[in-house]
Amino acid sequence: MKSTTNKTSKKKPKVTIFKAFKTIIWPRRGLVFIGLILILLNRVAGLILPWKSKSLLDEVVPSKDMSLLYELLIIVGSAILVQATTSFLLTRVLSVQAQFLISELRAQVQKKVLTLPISFFDNTKSGALVSRIMSDVEGVRNLIGTGLVQLVGGIFTAIVSIILLINESLWMTLFVLVPITLFGIVALKAFKYIRPIFRKRGEINAEVKGRLTETLAGVRVIKGFGAEEQEHKIFENGVDRLFQNVKKSLTATALMTSSSTFLLAGIASTGIMGIGGYYMMEGSMTAGQFLSFTMYLAFMIAPIVQMSNIGSQLTEALAGLDRTEELMNMDPEEDPKKRTIQLNTIHGNIIFDNVSFSYEKGKEVLHNISFKAPSGSVTALVGSSGSGKSTIAGLSATFLNPESGIITIDGNDISKVNLNSYRSNLGVVLQDEFLFEGSIRDNILFPRPNATEEQLQQAVKAAYVNEFTDRFDDGLNTLIGERGVKLSGGQRQRIAIARAILADPKIIILDEATSNLDTESEALIQKSLNELMKGRTTFVIAHRLSTIKKADQILVIEAGNIAERGTHEELIAAEGRYFDLYTYQARI
Image (cartoon, rainbow, N blue to C red):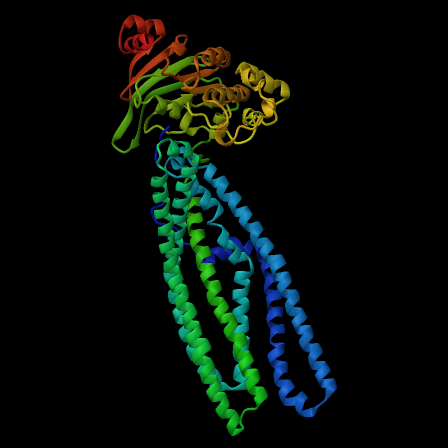
């Protein structure tokens, strides 16, 4: 069934650090606070080595005092132990929490996706959705995990290091700050450039995965037409676009890396070596002070370089969250403000009153359709392909909403009825019925997982599923493969009908439900369908007109209009469009 496009905001959302902090970090502030304490302890412990290196050269060695040496070694060893312990705890506490958050977000996004209207799925590849659910949220591990905490820790380390460096030598510190400032400017420019690239990468990745999913699902069609090379070229083009995108981001990343090498490791280190050498030669700086300064400098530069890498990771995370936010902002099909009517019991009286519908603005596919489908009646929809039969069925199932006119269920405007209260009484059997990977039993029990074995067996027998499962070694526990690929079309259809029988709905939509059956199977299924339809409001879309002779009313749909209506006998007597269709099929 086709459907309209889901309306979304034209302006793509952009997640800021503040918003990420408010929605993701703040609710987990306790763990983040523990992480900050751990990393501060880790960085303070790391400062012990350069501090004690100065003492080693300027105090311990000249004094030749072994007790001072032992004391120094104990302090340095303890500091290293603290570093190792806090590093382990950081990974254990924050990384695990980050993975838990990823699983939570994936569940939230999947839940949101299932609330979107059918139109969204008609216009979005399933593989692309899988990518958005599974991949786009992964970057949040850098927000709640060690990434953001290390960023804060790096800032703390840099500030403390600068204070210690100034204490050692003001002029050497001022000289170092110049290349560091230049590197900061380059990094900020690079982050601004990279973010849209990361966002585009997510889109391309989703497209490529979507096409790959389609290729694997349609491999029989591909092989049947010898189109392997054609599909390979399409996929090859997709991965090349992905490569070109990655190449752009790598250019910006390489610019930051080379800038850090040139400005921090190159200019800063060379300048400090020259200035420090001059000070030592004139006697205003000791060897211990110079060693201490260079180690403090390394301690400051390392987190700055690390912060640039973390900044890139955070930028990628925010780009992924942009796409996730875009998905989460989409309007669900269930609007609790509009759909306020709860149907506790359903009789099944459905009325179409001047209903019109269009998939595209200005191109109506249904024109002022009006008819009544009383409770327990069978309404058959016939007509040529594209006439509007499936659209009427889609409107009856609430998969679509009328553009004008009104549809009522038991006197209630269906557009104001709570979807769950309506669909819990709805059963649908489609022409190309979808079966889940697993066993035959699992698929039949899908609408009612807690059904008793007796209820299951009744549905199995009513749909004549046992006619073929009795021949299988594992019976109902037979695994059917992806989409039921191990079964014939008729067998899949009978399982789908058994599923609908077990659901025990008040309203049934049968969209070409017997089209994939051989003559013998059709005869069996027709008997079960006759039992299924008793006392239930049923819509039947059928090309095989012989299956709808007993329908209470037959609507002949042509070009979005009801061309004829009546019972089989009435329409045959009228010798109109239905008569032509029926007699043509009878001659075949």
